[in-house]
Image 1: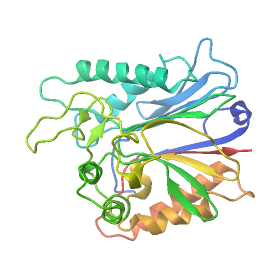
Image 2: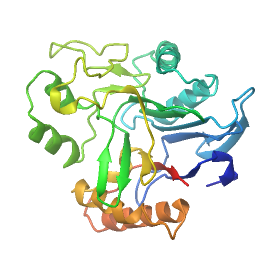
Image 3: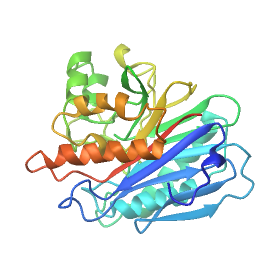
Length: 309
């Protein structure tokens, strides 16, 4: 972690790592971004692919904000879009209410959609954000196919749902749990059905309808039974004994993602190493796996790991 006081995150140990590419011949630009806000209101993020710092005004003591953003590589200005989304997050005050947080992020989405969608450009980014008040549950807001994981010595469990074509089919009753899991978690795909700033096709009913300009929230009222409890905007308790991970999809960009994902239960739950060291080891193993796969150039990879001290 760069230039952050580790103790400023209060009861949590927090680590962040970002790579343009895990292998030498990979991507040439890091379109990922992240935001760390510690308990004193000091914020860390990327601009022009370099770590930057700023200070929130009137930030509540002990309140934390963690976010991962992945600029859409196949769309124009992915890096710039992620940077502008972070700049918008810096204008949103701390909150302990999921409704207020959702409203503020909806307004930011619509503003950036209006400002950046012109001349045929369709930029976007993922956004998976956690607001962690000093008292009470954490607030989760999720758009896209970055993920939030809970990891213990038994395995790694995704706490978010990827906004991808398979999820749209599941919403329509066209995929069962096994097929949805296989398509989303056992294969690597670059297709996405919703992104921050971009809009969504999750709510589109016809094959040739244009993208919806707004965001389509997944919640227990519209999710199939097997995905309920993992809605996009909800409160949740953060428990001792787990390492939590926010990550862009570069971290599982291998031919068979699940064997590596389940390795995280050994790589990211050690008590004899700091989370900084454990993230370094996880990224090193990712690089080895990608290098062993012909024609796999990897992807931008960014992760925030945290756990209760």
